[in-house]
Amino acid sequence: MNPSSHFLFYSSRIENGTAFLDKEESRHVFSALRTSADDPIMITDGRGAIYECAIQEKTAEGATCAVIKKVPSSAPKKKISLVVGLPEKEAFGELCGNLASLGTSEIIPVECEFCQGRWWKGWETQSVRIVKKMIAGIKQAKSAWLPDCKPPEKLPAALEGCKGSLMLLADENGAPFVDVVDRTKNAAAFSCIIGPPGGFSQKEIESLKASGAVSVSLSKNRLRTELAATLLCGMVAAIQ
Image 1 (tube, helix red, strand yellow):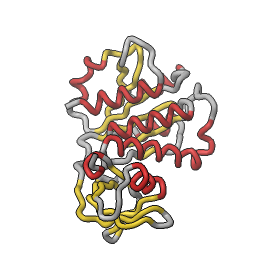
Image 2 (cartoon, rainbow, N blue to C red; image 1 turned 30 degrees about the horizontal axis):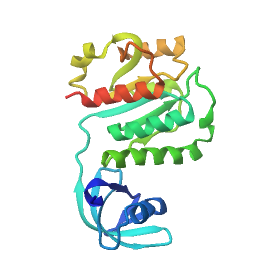
Image 3 (cartoon, one colour; image 1 turned 120 degrees about the vertical axis):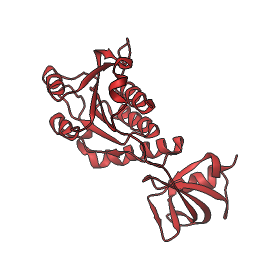
Image 4 (cartoon, one colour; image 1 turned 60 degrees about the vertical axis):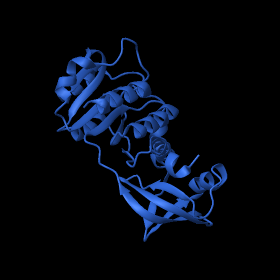
């Protein structure tokens, strides 16, 4: 298998014609794929570019690669933001990885009335793990765009940031998604809104409706937060 065509690697530091891989990425390059000096690989910076590179050498920090050429990636035609009531830690990590693969632009976690656990209080530490999940997602999808995962905030602040977008609220009592597709075709920005595992409170629902959110039903069955988020963002991404 040719790693230059099948695999995509990630680097947060590409400068002066050199891409720097950290220890985790370089371990995959050298140990799992058994590549060597001068072998070609593809690297993304997560900001819209993919670089064709040649492996140079191992270093104490990881590895260096010479950039051969930059291959720009077209920006997504629509901005898809996810506003999601925080589920459990592992579920949120799974959600972020899935949405990175789908090309979601940003993820806005929301601390709602019925959220449980409060694991996000140490957000700076947790965000490192979440970014790794998203990096794995874009590498698997061969995408050049890493989502922006915001720190948790309250619902009113999240809704303020949704202004100007088409707000779609996952709601088992909403209209079938197919019935609102025509309303989505001319929109350039979407805010997909998913409740936490305990659902939104009545006060939160009223706030969402007052903000103009359109209620849509995704399934006749009740879905987990992470599954509903992946499904709604994927359906929006698929709209032509």
